[in-house]
Length: 299
Image 1 (cartoon, rainbow, N blue to C red):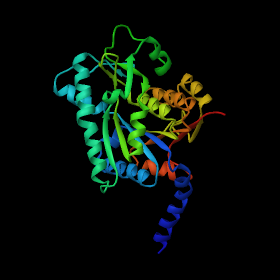
Image 2: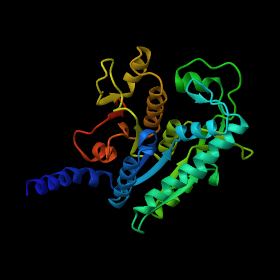
Image 3: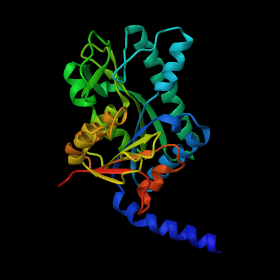
């Protein structure tokens, strides 16, 4: 009986959050271990469907770096990174698009739909579909502003940044009760494909949709201090100093920089959470304590 009462209390704790977020859009960046471990994959699919069933509108932007690396190695194509960004020749771009749009994207869609019960469906999209993610080739300012590093020497190929998101397409799908699942492939003026950082793509989508929340699933608990303790709450004005003093570094830099840009563009809150924790999305959103780092504007 006590365990049943505890379950009821958990549901009651979630109730005000369900009421608050009903009808709102959550953009979720899906990546890391949550995409690889089978139990975590199932957990993620069920969490996303629960959000939809209680009236929240999830939009998923996924990565796939590990899968791309594996495929490139199988094909004996060099894997090269500059400042954490994959050098993307035309040959590499072909593999990136094949893996993200043709393999991973459809696998995520199938997984969600397997659990949907036939009432709600996920639909897969590449950023080239319907010119969803209109992009241009990155320039040197991208490295300084987005990644906090010096621009590399030489050309890194077909790497792009998003100029515009086709929100009409996404809102149409949401209105028809679909869950959009987006592969971060940009489309240029001539229809050419660009490799887009998934963290930055998710932030651009959240900003364009004026999402209530942007949620990053990562392979860490969240943003940590220099003693490796989780920082539960951050304001945007704290982030630059944490980058300067080396507290925030590596792959966390584009996440937090994108978070600030999304917040300044109209997103209410950004959450960086541990995708290795089953049901981490629900624990962060529907409990008072939360499990990750919450980032908001100072004012």
